[in-house]
Image (cartoon, rainbow, N blue to C red):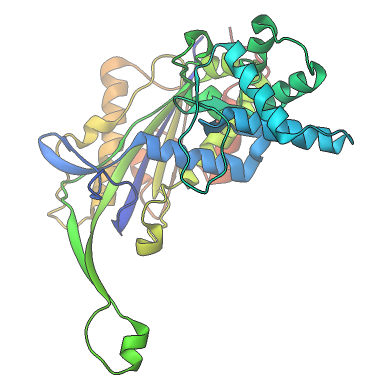
Length: 377
């Protein structure tokens, strides 16, 4: 039986710019023929990884960097110092670079600015390594000091014991696809449930010294773009794929509990010092299914206008519930378990569809619904 967990949320953002394009404008997309605000899946996955690191610690989260050789070299130096030994930094860097070349990675010498210290070689793309993989590589270099490295020995060091974010969001290695990890979590781009367009904030900054001298005029002027929307967010977890990536059902179940919290509490950080758009989802609906994942985004194919004054959040909640109810009636796709949490009366449209819970209860009930004892066939 293949289990999937679907996460749906409505989250309103005030004027903000949490995720911008190359021109500095809030990202957008056309859906149902109407321009909407969009927050990319990449930015929200990054925010979730930051929640993982804060709650679980760096040892449970991967490093995403081109500077993998420097990362391993630093660990070699730290471990040998702890043990009363001493590896010169240049020796550790050279050994780490050799390890990655032996593993089949293309390494390039980075450009450095005048006056900067030379850095270790880098991969040509961002590489995802777990803390365990970094430590295992460092331990291998220490224990094989001066020996010629063998690919068959090195490769497993970088391709076992994945961190939860590698297991969930996947890893692609251009140099050798055998290092790839298929993502067990899909995250959709969040889109507005109503039409919206960017606005411009014209601002001025005062020069304090000029002001104290009783002179007039702005120290600088500029504009920043912003949007405000109620967003529909969606993500889905393939439970069996996650178990395979992590190698242990109990570990996967614990990781899913962490994902529940991260999906709900994470928020991309773009321009937050300017806008402080620190909101939480006002409605979260979660289903556990024994089939394929199902998004409810088509509930908003016709953009909400809320001309009757009920508010976009209320109509959005009603539409989500109606879409789910219609799918159950038309296709017979009834989830094994369903839970809803909402602010005020926003959860009421789901009264006949889901059990109402709080966030701590949601984490517990979702993980319980997965049958962590492994009795499902």
